[in-house]
Length: 180
Image 1 (cartoon, rainbow, N blue to C red):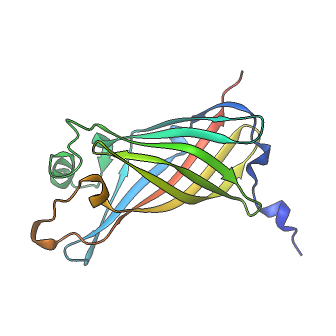
Image 2 (cartoon, rainbow, N blue to C red):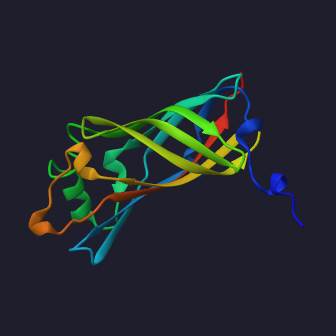
């Protein structure tokens, strides 16, 4: 029988101090139903940066920034439309930013994250549970799926009612500790 404490990562081992996002080990993907729910449009943000801070008491906070112009769905015409004023309006709003005000680990290897998401110039609270997939003194990797209602951020273009429901962000973010 396996001891759960040996198989469930814990963020308790994370070193205090400053952390930075490991861009090579981080993915942020987007999927959304379109064509009246018949087709899933999928893409990934290739421009992702971030940082964090872990306090002596184990508390953590930080931010992740997505370059909105880096969204790649594999279809150049669609990508250009997503960058237009109909959607992300990247000329005016070049980034999407999540600011984590708290990241609290639990005994199951999850991290309860609460903060603010800014998209298209609008900021809304966002809370979610992330799964810890790696946790050492110098590296922490979290994975999560987050549903976001694009209308909450003023992204309401919907020609012919083609776009239904929330968008889903699937993310795996890896942070590495910066030496003091």
